[in-house]
Image (cartoon, rainbow, N blue to C red; front, side, top):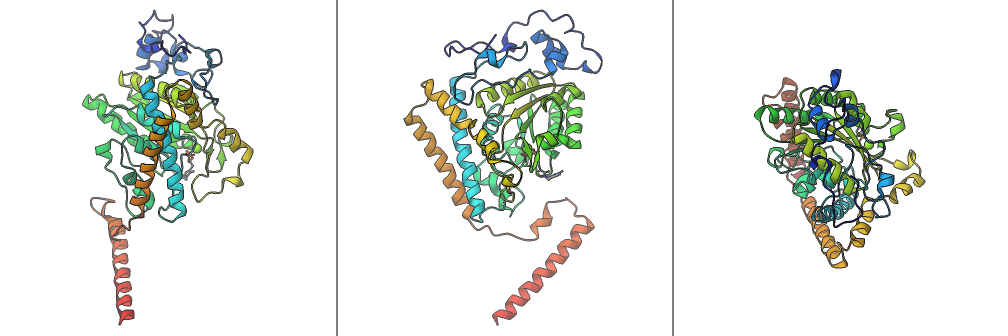
Length: 421
Ligand SMILES: Cc1ncc(C[n+]2csc(CCOP(=O)(O)OP(=O)(O)O)c2C)c(N)n1
Ligand SMILES: [Mg+2]
């Protein structure tokens, strides 16, 4: 089965086919590979190793020029074939891409105006952000990093509540349990362990929750990455680890981070399937992440998806990216922009016209206005709140710090009232 250029006849997904006879070694996984993945292996009729190893090429469906990737270039490998998502899903994704780009640019402007403390922009990574949200169902959980604000919003969290953390005057703006979205973590990779814990709890309770746990390329070198993946694999947990490889960990390029053939190849070492995908192609991302979520929900255990993308802007507003990379490299990636290729693709297919594009742009403007308005409000802060929610019983150290702060505030108030007399 291949990707069809005939848009009226979309082929069924591989796992929807009647499972064929298993390859000779498929039903008999060896050694440590003998886990829940063998069920998925039976479905695809391939060996455990072929199931777990990523395809030889990145999965791509729509190339940078907005045309369908011919399947000869795409390569067809049993178990690594994906069908095109439906038109409605593609249009919904495009709308979120446009909103996401506008959110990124608006937030970067708000930082420059001093309305927000910091913003790690996902400009250029919007396809990953949008697909991460759209592949999940209502009962699933997302565990994002500091760079994943657009994914959090695309999941349905209010934009101003999403950005509250980055304003720096409160711990977080939304209730993780209500939205089933973890807090955006700055300590690298901690969110993967939180996600694995939630998946374990869901499995013990017999719920069909899937967890999407997100991290960057740099974070794959963390010890927590190893612990999260190994625990998830050993306990056959329904987790999709989604690595956005944007080529840099601040100033450290990927080549200095890892010499693995790809980050997706790390999966097989834990006994899970890995796949790599063009991270600027939202169509491929929807297909690959969508299937990964379905497989995890069906009990195939965890999977890892690596998306190849690029951080188009600096790490945050506190970083000067010109000190460690060339403009020519950035220009190469501008040509692979996720929005322009999707616009061309949908327009050529007659799914997007000026009228619809105009309405989408208006929606994006409305979200930007919401952010400007919400983040321009002066929020009254209570300094002692810093200590309130750290531990249910404050530690002696925190009590001491709280008393010091109280003393300083009292002296400050006394000085102010004296000056006023
Ligand atoms: C445990 C830990 N170590 C170091 C840091 C400092 N730090 C913040 S972001 C970052 C780079 C992370 O790169 P990557 O995982 O590729 O994510 P990206 O920022 O590129 O999205 C580092 C080292 C941190 N936040 N947490
Ligand atoms: Mg990175």
